[in-house]
Amino acid sequence: AVTRTFSIIKPDATRRNLTGAVTKMLEDAGLRVVASKRIQMTREQAEGFYAVHKERPFFGELVEFMISGPVVVQVLEGEDAVKRNRDVMGATNPADADEGTIRKTYAESIEANSVHGSDSDENAKIEIDFFFNEDELVG
Ligand code: CMP
Image (cartoon, rainbow, N blue to C red; front, side):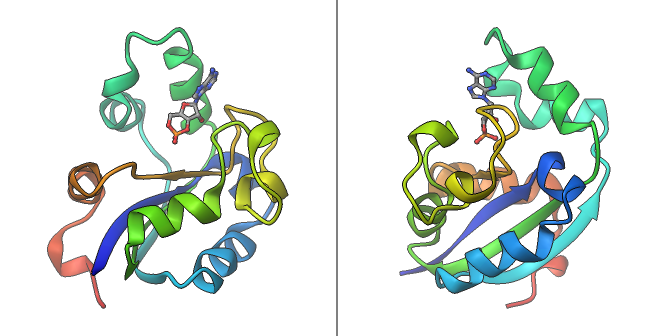
């Protein structure tokens, strides 16, 4: 089925001017950008977005990293979008990511790993709603 997922191009990638290169890899994987905006996340937004990780030892660093520069938040649409996006992103740790994936190609570290993508349809809806209003999604 055609579904939607949520993506973030993270500060390590925007800093290196890779917004277009990352988006091209997403598009070449069969995903369509139906919403996109470049934002500076606030600390409150980053803490809220990553609330599920708040007990993890890396939570503080993760929040600092995500507010260290602009990010591009996107809604992606395509056949089986969550899985399609996860496949093209590659493993969280670029050292474990397959050749040809975004993280293998561009990520600097497990933290500065260039992209985020939703891990389920349920979380995709929650994450899309966190950053976008329905009228901002244009298929
Ligand atoms: P993301 O998909 O955005 O979801 C949580 C993020 O936490 C993850 O990508 C990584 O950027 C980061 N992360 C996960 N594990 C670690 C770790 N062990 N150390 C630092 N950051 C991590």
